[in-house]
Image (cartoon, rainbow, N blue to C red; front, side):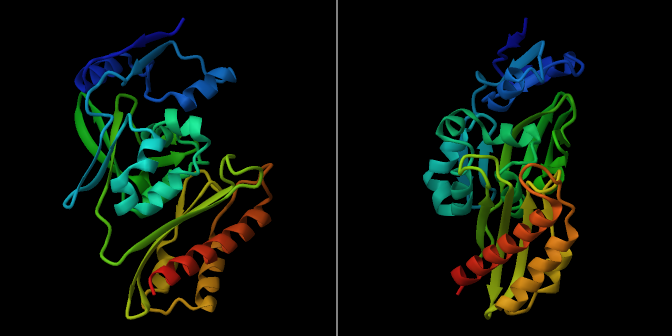
Length: 285
C-alpha cells in the first residue's frame, strides 16, 4: 500500500524527502506518475505530495526577474494566463498542444519537465527562452539551466533529495520573436514526433541572434549554437534558412521508432527548422 504524505511547508517536504534516502517520490499533478502506475511500470511505496504547500501554485512576473511558474501550476493555467499571453505568447501556444484539456487541467509544467520524457512540448522552448529550474533540498537551493536539466530519457539533473519548486524565465530580449512548431503523425493530441523552438533577434534586416532547440527526436533536446553562430549577421534568405536547417538535421542522431526511421526524422527536422526560421523572419520584418 502506498504511503502518501502531505507536508504543510517546503522545508518539511525537503526534510521528508531527505529522510527517505531516495525511496520517496514527489507528486504534484500526478498525471505522468499515474500513467506509469496504470501500466504497472512503477509501484511507489512512498509519495510526498506538494498540494498543501502555499505559494507553489502561483504565476508571477516582474520586469527585472521575468516570469516565475510554481511547481503546482498546471499547463492550462499557464496557457490561459494573461501575462503569459502578453509577454511569452509562444509559451502559451506551446502549452496548448500538451495532451488534451483534461491532461492540461491536471498536469503541471514543472512535473512535465521532471518526468524527463523526451516527448515533451515545453522543454525545447523553455531552453531557448533561457529558463532555469529552481531546486531545493535540506542543503539549500540552486538553479539549473533548462539546457542542462535533462540528461537522458527519464533522467534529470535533480539530485534524489531535491525538489523542483519553480521555473524562472528571464524577460525577453528587445525585439526578440520566439516560436514553437510541433509535428505529430498520429493525432493532434499525441506526443510530438518532433518539436522545434526558436528565438530570433534581427538588426538592420539581418540575424543578430538566434537560438534554436529540437526536441522529441533524441533523448534530450538538441541546441545548435555553432550553426546559429554561422548565420549571425546574415540575411535569412530562403537559401540561407535551408542550408542552416540541413546542417542542423545532419548533426542529430534521431531515435528510430514507430513514428519514423532515422532518415525520415532527419527530413522532418530539416523541414520544420526551415519553417520556424521563415515564420520568425517574417514576424521580425
